Image (tube, rainbow, N blue to C red; front, side, top):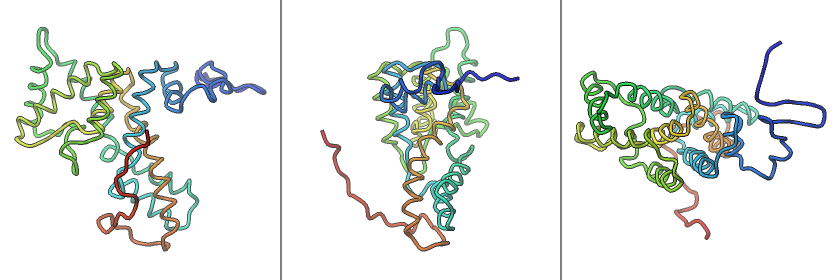
Length: 254
């Protein structure tokens, strides 16, 4: 015998963390359901809004992402949609989609290094100096396309408004400022770093960093796969050759 605390399945009844699933349907959002499944309790309205913002923030990053190229390549071979989706998710690892997890680990280990009376600014300066001296890259900062990640700005705004932004976000922002100062170039907190800091502030373990990335990104992968199904089969997909022909910038309806 072994134990599980997630879902109880009985004839005509399903309990998710103790809540009847049929009562959750129509009562909570998918974001709240994810929080419940992982954490074991329903989120506060503020936590739910931030989790939802996180899921929206990383839905897609175009055909430049390795997971999108992988999913589209496999889709072009004539496989079922789920096979192509799985292939894309299998591309998620330490170097693609893993920065959030690494950032959580780094931020938590950094707090363990804080000395009595040491301010967060001093702590940030210390760990950045050590990283620079040892030529170590700090995950969650800088981006190959964005020198000011617009997703980060909005995520942190939402978190601040909802009162979720805590000590991990504060430390992450100070590290970004110190990295920029010591490097003499913009190395801002990117979306993965922001998500990592927010997940840490909400009490999640580091391992969920990749999970949240994958849960969110599968949405964009599905769109890429469906589009790829209309292309010629078994084609070589070169991201730099892609030409965007979709809708131009438009406003969200009020």
